[in-house]
Every structure is written in structure tokens, then in C-alpha cells.
Image (cartoon, rainbow, N blue to C red; front, side, top):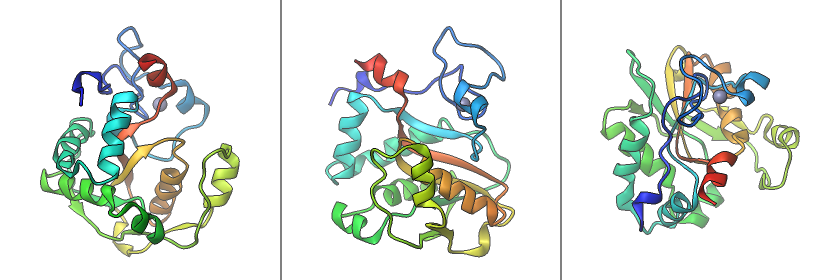
Length: 211
Ligand SMILES: [Zn+2]
């Protein structure tokens, strides 16, 4: 595994979603075009890596349970990107369908969440969110169709999120449709803030860079 190919999101970055602008990008409190066009429901994205060919291999190995030892490293990479917080966060997972979890053999996001708790990023709340209906794969759908499929599909299972700052753990962040549904459910239940933690974030410009 060649670690030098890993793209680590750096600064300057969007003050809303932490999308990196590249070295020549704007400094200070600049906001990226997608966030300006449609202000996100979340309060930041702490991505361990950007999704490139190298991180894809890393993520696939991790997903298939071959490189479980990567979890501590990935957790540290994520925690380095977390906005500072005076209050302890609750760590909550994006819920998987039971059958998908079974298909994959294990839940890699749960493993990552446990590591994040271990290194002091917050207190893990298992089963904080739940799926209330089975949804088809979102691949190939547009943003509107994804949102429609996910409407009402995710609910807060435990009432303790009220007034809390949440760290929502996902594995690979693509369109963000599922995590957005989770963020909205958490905010409806009274969460003060929701920062998304993922180990790889898919950005078109990062893929271009890797090509
Ligand atoms: Zn942004």
C-alpha cells in the first residue's frame, strides 16, 4: 500500500463544509460554491482523506474486513480535522440496513466510531439512529430522487440527542444524501450541532487531481 498517494484535506478550506480550496484558494471565512448555492444542514465535515485511487484501495480493504488495524489510524486522521468543541460530543453512526451489515460481514463505521471514542472525540451512543424502512441503492439517482427515497427513512432512536453536539460517523461520503437525512433527523430531535466524520470524502476535484 502506497501511503504517499493519500490526499489529506488541508487548508484553506470552506468554513462551512471544510472542502479544501487548494493552496491558491481564498483564505479566511470563505464559503465554497456548493455551500453558497445550498447551505448544508450539517455543521462541518471532518474527512480523514479525500477519495482518490489510493484511499479507494484503503477503504475497500477496510470495508472487507482485511485491514481492521487501520481503524486507529483513520480515527486519528479524522480527529485532526475536527472543529474544536468545549462540550463533549455524542458519537452516532449512520445506520446501515441489517441485511447490508450482514452482507459486509461487519460494520466498519462502528469500528471507526469505537476508535474515535477511544481517542477522546466523544461518547459513543450505539443505535442512536435507526432505519425505519428499507431503501433501494441510491446509485444513479439525482439529488431530488435520493431525498425522496430517504424521506422518513431515518429516525432518532434515542431521545438523548436534545441539546447535544453530535459527531455523525459515516464511511465514504459521496452525495451526502444519507448523511443529510441523518443530520436533519438529529436536528429535528433537538441536536445543537452535527459534524460529519468520514474516512474518505468524494470530491470531483480530488478525483481529477488523482487522474
Ligand atoms: Zn462548503
